[in-house]
Image (spheres, rainbow, N blue to C red):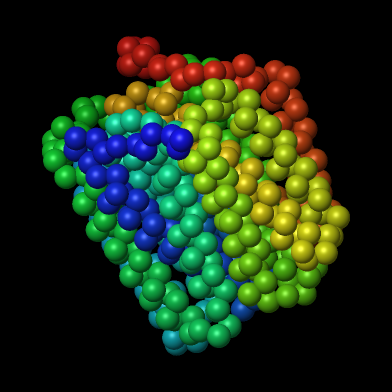
Length: 416
């Protein structure tokens, strides 16, 4: 029998939430291909400048995501997300105008990336905290289902972006803009009866930002989880964003379609892992142990890619890599939700986002420098070995290897 499906909370609609996540993720799938390929395939930038471009897109996560978590806890999440998604019009219309008039430059791409990333830094903690408001049972299952919708929709967006060389680029940007606006409307609908006055907290923004960090620092389970998530962002995510388009251009000598299929293969692996979780597994008794094993396996797959496998083996390896990554993302998100109190959830989620996406821009910059110095394949191999080493160290010294069930952190210890 399949595990029990998560149900709506009294104040929220999980279905509307999934519709919003799906629309947003399809737009994100377009972004995943279009942004790096504009740098690599259209502007022909060097590895160092590609790394800086990806850093500009992700750096706002490091700067603003904690602030975004505080704002999410102090506002009606649905209305807050609607406003944020409408703000995406600004960078998207700027990029569209540059393409139509023939004024696309590297500097403009940096500005676009920073503005788009800044909005995303406020969107992500709000969207994550909204999940636990619209679901009242089976949180691991809810995260797995949301992840399934997210990465399936991203895959559709990636496939659409693969037709970049056959379809008008401005048309793809218009589709992305429409999807982002529709997503904000669905997410607004998903939470209806919660009054905004009930969401507001007293106290300064700086103190509330510190409270999220303090809660994580005082809970060894949350702290060790965030350290593993940071290692994933630094060693895996940042490298992936820089190395994959350069691998396409410089090692396999292919174009945008090949790069899109690399992205699709990764997403397909993520989707498969979430399907297995939804249909067969249900709930992991020791999620920390599974998380660390997946980290080591991902490092091994990077080493395989660094050996310059034939194309069929490259795509198979990326599918398996995506499967391990999807499992890790589901576990990281669900453990963050389960370990954090509801009143502090957006702030703790913002620390999770900070650990993952805040370390990624540093990893992207480092990856660009390593690729420029040693080449694409050696850089991927070294980062893969470092990932394996990080996983082994965590297995030996981290309490995550011994974890079983969630343990709530008391609010009193945080507010003292």
